[in-house]
Amino acid sequence: MSYEITAEIGFERPILTVDVVCFTLINQQLHILLLQRNQEPFDGKLALPGGYIHVQEDAGAEDAARRVARDKLSIDPTYLEQLCTVSGRERDPRGWSASVVYLAVVTPSRLRSKRVQEFYPINDDTTLYGLPELAFDHNDIIEMAMQRLRSKSIYSSLPLFFMPSKFTMSELQQVYAAMTGVRRTNPSNFRRQIVDQGIVEPTGEMDRRMVSHRPAELFRRTQRTLRYFDREIG
Amino acid sequence: MSYEITAEIGFERPILTVDVVCFTLINQQLHILLLQRNQEPFDGKLALPGGYIHVQEDAGAEDAARRVARDKLSIDPTYLEQLCTVSGRERDPRGWSASVVYLAVVTPSRLRSKRVQEFYPINDDTTLYGLPELAFDHNDIIEMAMQRLRSKSIYSSLPLFFMPSKFTMSELQQVYAAMTGVRRTNPSNFRRQIVDQGIVEPTGEMDRRMVSHRPAELFRRTQRTLRYFDREIG
DNA sequence: TAAATAGTGTCTATCAGACAATATATA
DNA sequence: TATATATTGTCTGATAGACACTATTTA
Image (cartoon, rainbow over all chains, first blue to last red; front, side, top):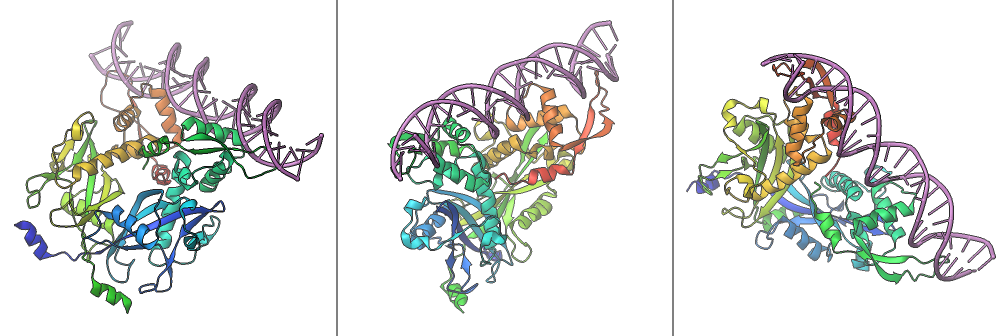
């Protein structure tokens, strides 16, 4: 059978890995999860979490990404999507490699406190977002992830996945502002826009954090948030 | 060195390929390039053009896609972008495999006449777009490609890449309509929208096809078309 | 001059952002 | 009651789509 011939001709198989760009929000600032490598190549350098595809274990690349998040990070992402695939001869000294990269968002409340210190703040105004030089082409990957994050924040409900289960409108507005870079000075227009989309609903509860002014109502994501998000935008 | 140990532990490497979803426009109808396979698996079935990564030859996956287009199809795509990566244990009977899929658009005038018969019409109203059952998961890939094509046609200048070097406004409008499914009844609003974007410019020439009414002016893509398109939208 | 599409100009409903006013908690 | 933010309501400039009108070619 000809596929045996193909196998005999035997194209050299490249390395195939997955990497996860995992974002969260700490003190209203965007953070990214990086791990220090403890082996060659790039021993000692910071890198995105990732790993080899396990052909016995993983049903697909997304499955592998979830396995990495679960086993290496003990994180269950609120949101996960394929970002892109990077590949080439030069990016990994071990040889021609490809990595399927996933963009993950995790609600801060889901994070174990140990995890928090592995998140590094994103500084939009600085070269490399204020991050050091990372292993492989991971700085480039982060650039792409940031672009995706920003553009999806503009016309989709992606920022909602950064929120805890209950939140106020002004908190949500701050997150949108942080994501898009646009400071929307006006709370009323923001509220109308969000409410009209039907992606949040009032819980009936009030924010009980003893502020010296009128307390805000608490909202939560609706079922529609996901469906709204699912329309193809790519 | 520890990476040698990694190599010794030796995760089984999956198969890595590229596939190209190549669209063109024939008689104002969207067509897709499919080839009949002449080897197992799926011998005799229609499939997207694709092939193995050649680690010696290809600088990266996009390079491999261009090589496939050039060598297998003798096509130089007007537009090429990474669509997604599909992967899994089941999609290829030869074993766990991943394929980096590229979406290509080629101007009809660039097609050799021999090529034209390998393009199959897309019928939006029919199951599987009126195409037969294809090899691998290629029907699923086409579904994704169509969604990307449609959504990008709405808010970007992608449809321009389907046009020949010179075209009239009404021709362009027909293409936009075919891509988005939206029939814009009004030519004047369409014209204003396109002109305001600055993505076309008048050639000064007239359409000389002896029609029994006022002839239309011919336009061409501007340099800005590409830049306009390049803003990240994903 | 009839017919058909090309191309220009204008009107209007809609909406995003600006702004004003009111509500309600604590200090 | 002063203060600060929450929340509601209104106004307005920009614009996408509707529509009317003029232009230009062949039959």
